[in-house]
Image (cartoon, rainbow, N blue to C red; front, side, top):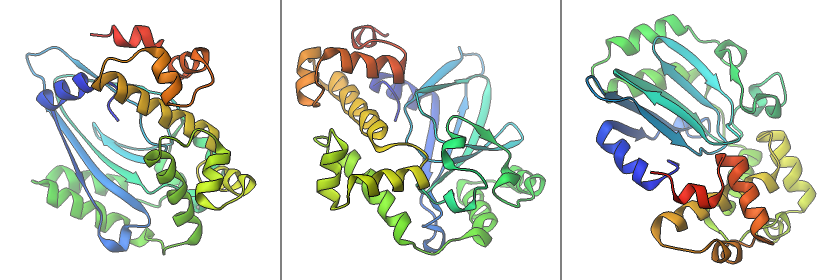
Length: 258
């Protein structure tokens, strides 16, 4: 998600973001394709800030193809001049069985694409460069990843269900509550997260609680004490700690950002 709503509105004026779902055959491997381009020639550079989901992404930018592991905190990207980024957002847990290392080893890391996929990246870049529309680019990417399509799995469905519960039910503030809602033991949840996401469920709950805090701060004037109560924090210090860990600023400093 874009960190600040006003930044999101500003970004919409400066760049164009489009998202496309994959064909059914790739639905277990890829969550979506995304493309963003901008033309800031003669304008000031724009810094885009995001607090993303814990997915792996293939990123194609300035003639390079990179595989990015899940991002643990907010990240920023400076857009200047004219440019385009093409991305593939992989389904949660989909790459776990393709990796030679534990998913946790890839948090905040950049990988060589060849570590996971046997791709002809030079050919991919050439074909994408010659494409004239989003539809052509998405078709190229779908053809590229078709050989790596995976079948539905119980484990993949389970990890996505767990993350969906955390995202959609903001009153889930503890792993024990997630256990009750999912009818899985705490140990089973922790094992699933460790094996397929490389992160622990407590961390992800904190992250999405922070998403909710940001929405509340953007949509209405709320006191920090109100956020503490509505989001299930034990006290203000815990909320402030999460803000500083994920965003690098306190809630009070966040509300003063331009």
